[in-house]
Amino acid sequence: MGKLLIAIGLAVAGIGVLISLGVPLFRLPGDIVVRRGSFTFYAPIVTSILLSLLFTLLLSFWRR
Image 1 (cartoon, rainbow, N blue to C red):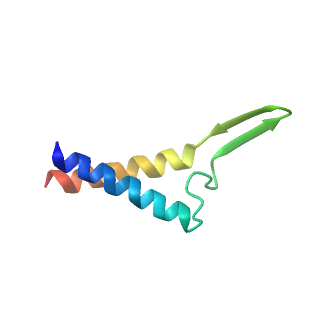
Image 2 (cartoon, one colour):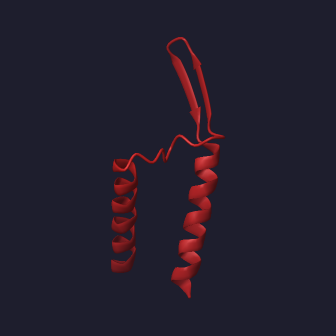
């Protein structure tokens, strides 16, 4: 449980550093944004795929 909490904390800190450096983390090309008047629909498809791959790699390295 301790290792998991440390990993989550490091991931959150890493995301914070990337955002403060100006990296557009959650607005990648391929994400769908539809704006119609006061309605906005956002579907982060590419972001979801990249996060899934990242978490899969992290967990596979962690299990070894």
